[in-house]
Image 1: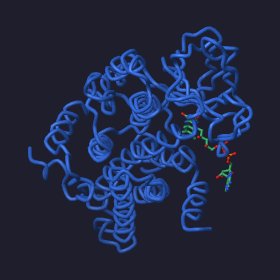
Image 2: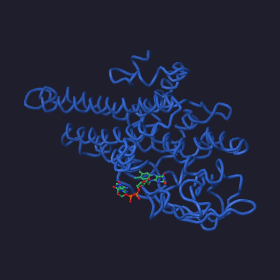
Image 3: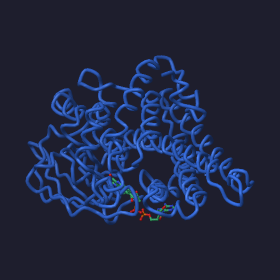
Image 4: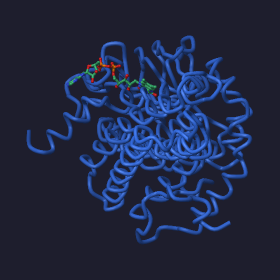
Length: 399
Ligand SMILES: Cc1cc2nc3c(=O)[nH]c(=O)nc-3n(C[C@H](O)[C@H](O)[C@H](O)COP(=O)(O)OP(=O)(O)OC[C@H]3O[C@@H](n4cnc5c(N)ncnc54)[C@H](O)[C@@H]3O)c2cc1C
């Protein structure tokens, strides 16, 4: 199958691809490989969505397809994809996986743990963690949010008190994606009470099996229902010094780095999901007959589809700019904030249009259309709310 056949009409913007060193053959091979796993990724996904669980078989399919190693360097059993390569592979995954919760769990694994350990971890930490993370034998999560600190993340109260052999970690974390299945949790906590966001916080790769780590009951959510979530409690957990990621006090810059990759991964997936949704809407508009003709012949319907296309391609252009900025080695802060805002808001608007365009069928759970809207709303909140992204953009414009 040719690449053109793989990505008919709604192909990712070519601007994401031609970076020096971009491994087009590898990306194409990965995408073709993923197509062969579609049935396993999607098996009974609506049952998982209804039950608020992720079946082990579907997660194992993700691991066996090699997706858990996408951001792990090749020396440690992964593929070490660049930002541009990763964006294309995940966007393609989004076009074939019908369940956003599965992709969200994958992105959480790749970004929460694989990314910071690979970039900032000591050689010993990389050797100990990365091969198992790449294979999916161990699952990663990260814990930043607390009951009294969400958008204002560095108002967190969790403390990791340094001592001769490591840290004593105490605190509460909430809304932690993948907490019910994670083996390694990157916990952000204050290590120096005298310092602020810069220098006062550190990131620790905490083994979930350590005494004093407890996982709360699974959270029930509006969307992304198959992506497991729970709160975490750390009761004087003795964390070895070897679990420190990077340097003590580097938590702020590690989180800043991680969030860029998280936005890249989660929102590349969303672009793919929006492409699949638009194809579905086009098919419906061409086949659903009312008043003796296909509804796509009515301007109200065709303009709705044109608007969906414009939002999708506008969002794709923002992601392409963010990828280019990341690959250019700059901070990419404005482009990342803009991409997150543009894609998440386009996804909500398009998902509502998809429901309306399908009429009653769009509102029914069994068609899977309404799940798109429920899943999209979360994107306005996690990884920094829309308000926070607007604040960032305005600040970078000098306000
Ligand atoms: C699906 C999902 C998955 C998540 N996964 C994780 C995870 O894996 N790990 C983790 O640590 N956390 C996770 N979170 C938590 C998420 O990061 C927080 O919910 C988010 O940062 C917002 O924090 P909050 O909920 O405390 O809202 P708040 O910060 O209390 O915000 C409430 C409202 O006030 C607005 N607001 C706040 N401050 C400002 C401001 N300065 N200017 C303008 N408006 C403002 C916000 O935009 C929002 O509308 C997840 C959340 C969701 C929904």
